[in-house]
Image 1: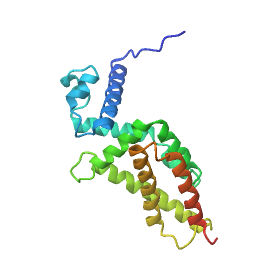
Image 2 (image 1 turned 135 degrees about the vertical axis):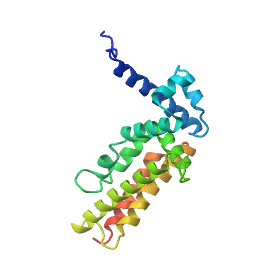
Image 3 (image 1 turned 90 degrees about the horizontal axis):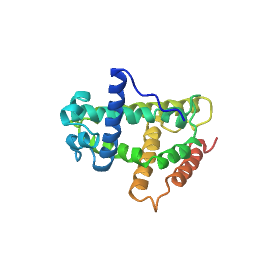
Length: 205
């Protein structure tokens, strides 16, 4: 059995170490939040001294932003998988996306925790999440408009408001599932919502 290729250059070793630190920080931030996690604890869990960690990430805030960026990169298929590439809302994809979250509860929890900790304007992740939600609302609203223009979606729906509702519902279902997974089935709940949403968007057409 062949051995995995080891990084040979200094840059490759640094990139691997950065990835290891981000993985540790992701786990700790998901467990105890950004505020509740000491950067020294991240260093210890990553097998580094604090100066060694700060060599890769100059501050705890910089590490948080790297964790957020990695989390977003891991979920970059969100818009295309959930909303489609053809300018259409792909409602059957909603439970599929919920199923992926169910398989990766740590990342789902991390996202929920970091959003809650980023509500205040001076929080390190505040601007990132404001921009993220604005972009997602715009994507969903544009697709609702496209559906209205070609007759697939009711004309009386306000795209901006419906977009906010859709994202809020999906986030809310995720939060309830994380709090009480024995009582709330995220996939079943998402499937029911997708069916109701389709009826709502197309009623009377």
